[in-house]
Image 1 (cartoon, rainbow, N blue to C red):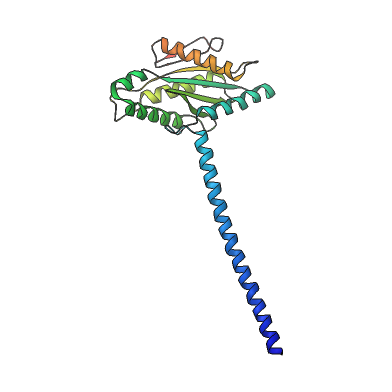
Image 2: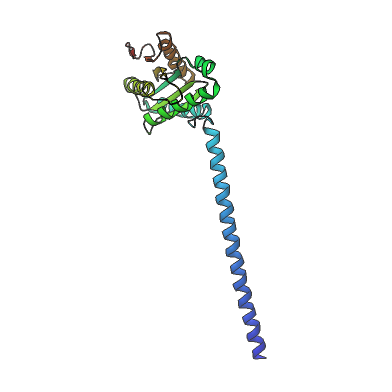
Length: 216
């Protein structure tokens, strides 16, 4: 009788031991599955926010950040500037060298812009050959200086697949009281077209910001 009880106890202990082992294995498998799901979610989230060709922010993310930054300016009376950049003569690059070279030009420009901006700045592809920079806590003069740095860095970039330098025109605007996101974007865009009509490869500030225009 005692042997029978001892045997049953040992069997129960072994069953508990096996159950704990199974639970640990299941817990480990759940952790692996959760990690895989998290990785997949982060990958999807990243894809939803980044331009697939250049790797910088896409239009959706730019709009989201601009909306938040404009609201922050309205609530806390802080500063915000936006830069619009458009690659010069990009249509002729596509027509002359083909769209594959055009894609390489866009990727090279994005890499230069990403390297030159500050950690607090957001650079993204606004559409086609246009890029946008969202500069929080940044006034017009500081934004203008950054645009010039970006312009010079791009012009001086040696592209192995193209002998001529790639240049860009930049338009800069600072948030003004009452501005909504479209107002800020429109003024930066208009300033950029002033730079393009003036010959390109230069930066221009929106009217009322600063009167001077700096060129190459």
